[in-house]
View 1 (cartoon, rainbow, N blue to C red):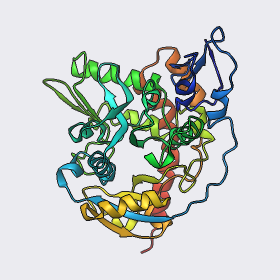
View 2: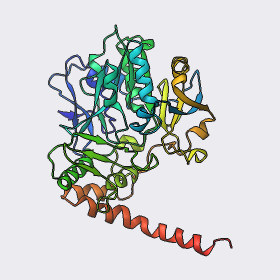
View 3: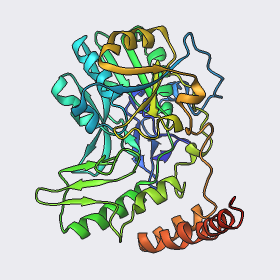
View 4: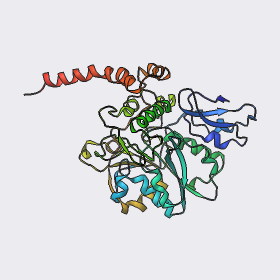
Length: 379
């Protein structure tokens, strides 16, 4: 088996389209799930190249609709377990009630992986609640799509872009799909995540988790707080030793997939009907429960939002207001990324690596900023 392309985003559509099952998504040496090809069974049909979103230049995408909202689900229980405003859950509820199947990401506590799953019952939607800040693995799901069914699919922008090409190539009816992506920061290496999971399990003295919540709202929704649960214990990532070490790697762009550094699927450049994310606009900084940035790009998406708006608190606003704070280009690679990867490969301690390559380099600028604010403070 050999890797097909280095900048593979792991969307999985090549695996799904291959009739010979010559392609499989597997972790590469850097800890990212990518497409690998078995040359012995490949017949050079070219379908994998045709559907790959990374093989083609990404055009500027124009939309039939461009409407943007600050949104929050009215159901407070749903809101509590959502990462931001709970709109994705409400879309899932609408989909199930209208005969759709829902495809989303759940956390598999046996594998400690984020994986795609198909749900056809409202009771299953809770599996998808909350963001997962690791690479989601769609293996085995897309190939199950039936042309007789309707689907709501929630995925990263590159996954949705690949899925659109799959839909076109396999001649599915595009009108039977409601496609939703989100403002994506990038995906970190599973080598980092696995090391962190190992660290947390050791701290908790457990072999497995029963639940992992990437954005617990225990301290309010503005905080990034991981919550791990076992049958008898609960662990929060804001303790004095951990101090949210995973998010330091994530937001520090310490080790993201190479395709994330050149990603063009940002803001309105999307193949989806609807885009979701956190609303960080300063006008809403006092909100304690969570707000979604909701963008609508197609008539299909607009119609759905009009149907569920009675269950949402909606305020329409300009794109730059609703999506303030969301990145507009590919993530900037941390200058110590290669050294960080090398340290992990040598078995380095996740906390020590964080201190050396993420904390110390940021210390001097922060000290200078603080001094400047004191010296030049207006009296």
